[in-house]
Amino acid sequence: MGKTICEKILSAHSTDRVEVGQIIQVNVDLVMGNDVSGSMGVGIFNQFNSSSVFDPDKVVMIADHFVPNKDIKSAEQVKVIRDFAKTYGLKHYYENEGIEHALLPLKGLVGPGQLIVGADSHSVTYGALGAMAIGVGATDLAAVMMTGWVWLKVPESIKITLSGNLRPWVTGKDVILYILKNIGVDTATYKALEFVGPGIENLTLESRFTMSNMTAETGAKTAIFPVDDAVSTFLDQVLDEEYQAYQGDEDGNYAEELNFNLDEIDLQVAFPSQPSNGRDINDATGVEIDQVVIGSCTNGWIEDLRLAAKVLKNNRVKENVRLIILPATRSIYRQALNEGLLEIFDDAGAVIGPPTCGPCLGGHMGILAKGERAIATTNRNFVGRMGHKESEVYLSGPAVAAASAVKGKIAHPEEVV
Image 1 (tube, rainbow, N blue to C red):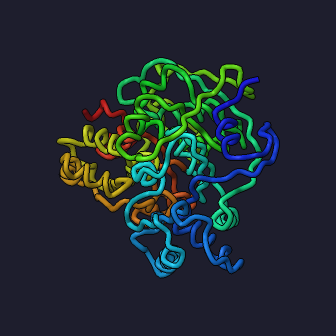
Image 2: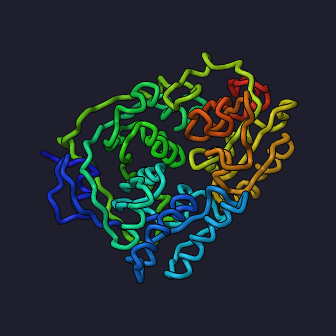
């Protein structure tokens, strides 16, 4: 019996027998915390009076959820991880640099074959680069920072084969919303999703990051894409180290195999209050909205900003609608500036903010009042996710979000362009 990609990565990081359902001890290549999870993890870490972290080059702290600090509590949370980074000599501490799940890949800290632990559920994003990345809580974060290893149960794997080509305007956001609509939010609980097939070559790397990110909404433990030319080209620009890329075996032990044809996937909108509550765009238009958010670790990439600018150019945001645009990192912000995208956004009447998680988790910079509706390129639309529990959040890709800002209601981009 062959092995899946995740089984191969786990085998390379453990001396234990790797078999589905077994609990094994695995060494990690990188561990990451943010200003929320990291501050809690540091508190637990300090209870053990440890004199050091297992490797100061492999422990990463990123302040991104409530930065720039929105209040005293958030300032104190950031101070906790800032002081921790200084005390233990962490090589990688970032503040106001961007959102962790875009920043780590762009900083060259993520590569194929790695086992990465992040104290954030959307750490699965790094699977786009052929890494096995899992989300953990603050207690596990503290333990891994001390020891460099973690206990894991070997997950079952689901093979998802993609074929076909993307329709106009459609991106990875639409693909993953479509998949969520079809498989639901609990089909993949504690399983690994392995994407394969000829359709992958038609997905940009940004689309793959988005898809990996949102597999968290299926309950998956991790998700992973194979390493191809698009991944290799990206890694040549950011990664200095050699890496080991793994491919799943044809006779691997897959719990289930699913097939999706990209030709059949239209633009998607997820209605409240689950990311799996998706509808094709033709069944979603006309819902009036008060706010639009374009950004987050899901869709704050340069590709997303370019697509939004294509829709917004020579258009204006509808009166009484707020459009908030948050590039995912400072480098993406600078690139958007150099390409003239920020000027297009400003001319359209958008508010351009710094790279931060901000409104995605109801943190700051775009909170909804009672009864308000937003359409956002973020990854979750749970009750109260972006503000008042009686507000509503709809999820889409950047083209639909931008068109909706212009029309004042959920709209197809071809209604605007």
